[in-house]
Length: 207
Image (cartoon, rainbow, N blue to C red; front, top):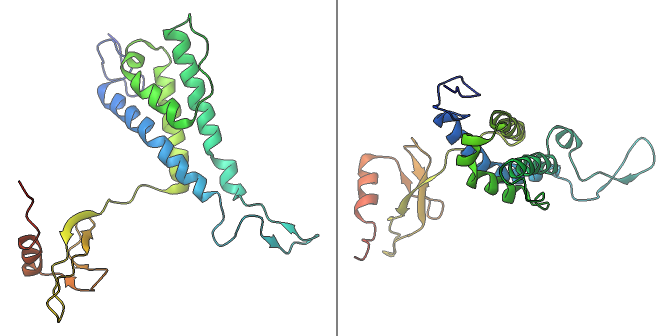
C-alpha cells in the first residue's frame, strides 16, 4: 500500500492521490499566468520607468521595480525552481539523456504537466515537487490576490433608442449579480421582465 505524500490517503501505489494530482496539474497550468501578473505588480503604479525623484542625497533615477515585491517573489526565481524540477524528472526518467536546455516558465510547466501521469506513478520526489509548486502559487497569490469571478456573457443589449435603433452592445454580469447596466446606452436590466426580454430578443443562431 502507498499513501499520498500530501494527505496520507491510500493511492494504490501512486505518490499522490487523484485530488492532489488534479490540483498539481491546475497549478502547473496557472503558474505562468500568475507570474506574468506578478511582473506587472513589480512596476510601481503612478511612476514611469527611470522617473527622477527627490531623495535625501543627490537626485537620481528611481528604481522602476517595487523592491518589496521583488524580495518576496518573482518570475525569475519561479522559472528557476520549476526548471530544476524538470531537469531532475528527466534525469530519473531518461538517465541516458543530457539535461534539458534552459526554457521559459510556461514551457517547463507544460512539460511537467505532460509527464504528470508518469511522475505520480514513478518519481520519488513527487511529494516535494507538489509542495514546492504549491508554495510558488501561494507566494504569487500574496501579490496578485485570488482570481476574480469571471463575467458571464448574457448576449447583446436589446434596448431601443428614440429612433428605433437597437443598441446591440455586449451585456455581461458577474455570477449572482441581479442588476446590470449597459455600458453603451446605460439601459438598466434589473427586473424579471428585463431578463426575459433580453433572452427573448437575442439573435437566433443559424443552424
